Length: 511
Image (cartoon, rainbow, N blue to C red; front, top):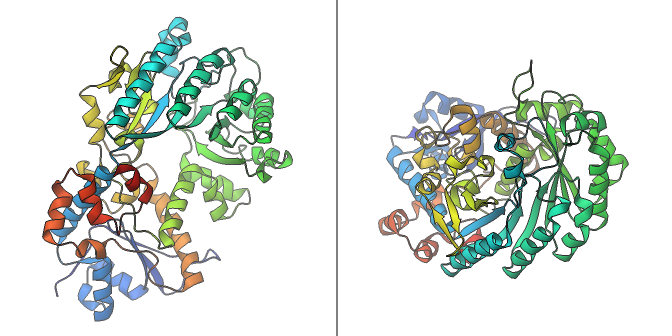
């Protein structure tokens, strides 16, 4: 049998719980089918050299069944289209609503991704969303719901959404969200949260994300109030106030070149105040992107942030759990290794490509919140009179930013792991959000899966660490494959893939 190594194969070392490599073993990861397997060194070496005939016959058959080997690379290309299209068609009825009540903010942080908005002037900056606009937005939501689209959450963003002066507007938005059975969460700098405690309890806010940049000295240089006063003490007090009132808080700790070595000191403060012991509190470190300080390079990146956490005494697992991008990756891999589900082969990176509507005070609609106030990148607007979303020609461009349509991604072994990367980062790096953005993903993925796979292998002593999508795809007949490649019926697609598609809740919402 003439067999080739899959084009989507990743071959890695495997690290045990001691941190040392597992002797005589290597890790195979297939980025198309989600198959993760432990093999001996010789098999891995033969695969790297393309010497498939040298592999034991029984092992060769198993690797073919799992997708590490293939008889037909054309079949792999078709499988990509089937998986990408299936996921997109099933999830097309689910969307997220993000509202910017105002672009105004009481901070002037030097690395703010929205700082371009300051050039538009104080009058424009201070404008707030009117009640008429709120009515029009939720009227448009009702029309989308009538067509079968489910919008189950409302996120408040800014500017700063929780300015005390806008509390009546936020109450009105919250009432509308509750009428539409939407969960509410908010991204806030936390400075005026104390004015909103009763409101957030009344409307059962799901989560607050609040940001700090380290201890008092560092934070008050970086998270600058527009009046020039410090912000650290008041933010910490408001975090504790929210947690005492059972309002879940996630604290984001920004890390840039200025505070890479000192950001961890905030963790000790959180411990001393008892926050890290509360079930209503969590925290993570995040490398800020796109920032620039004179005499420095851009932000440190995820790898340096993880290294900083490990140098401060965290284990690899603990550090990964508290670094934002590593944490998301770790959670998805842990779920994959539970072997309850197959890999969810999502074709897009985030909600910006498949169903996020970010709406500013003037009713302009954006697909990604990193692009707000950049009017030439808006995808549409709210028609107040008709209470309807009106979309422009850029909307389909966003919806087509999927791995099978990005040439470099369609042939990359990390295709359904990386999923094209962040569009905003691609725009920042290349001036084009239709490009892929790899960033540090490959390095992050390789180190994370090598450690997690080693720990799992030592615990279970099983060579197959995950399910593989190769098997259910091979079980499809020609007619079923044709339907998955052409049908626009969610129910017809669901009836075929329900035994291997991961997200049952999404399916139930869709059909």
